Image (cartoon, rainbow, N blue to C red):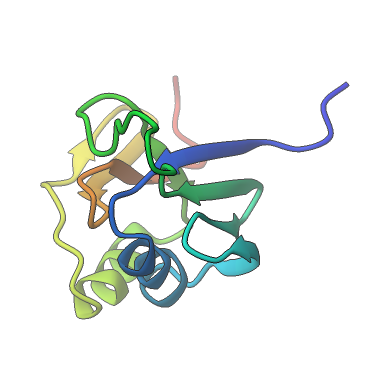
Length: 122
């Protein structure tokens, strides 16, 4: 029924947001509209970074407004890589079947890395 999935994030500084999602996280730009939109491709998800046009209401970085989860195979190695690129993480949360590490983009939007514990008895 659905062809693809995407999320849109409002940002104040489109250039800084693009740099974070492309250079820091390593996502690829699908297309962009200069000064207004950069659409990047993450594994299994399209993320639209939007700078509101003049006169539009702005909502960027409000806590709880959006959370983007990125599944990884080896949490520590990805954290180490992203820390080397300037990303700051909250302490890892250990759950029965997952390990999660939260961080923020430059606008304060929350993202997280999640590692599934394969073979965990539930």
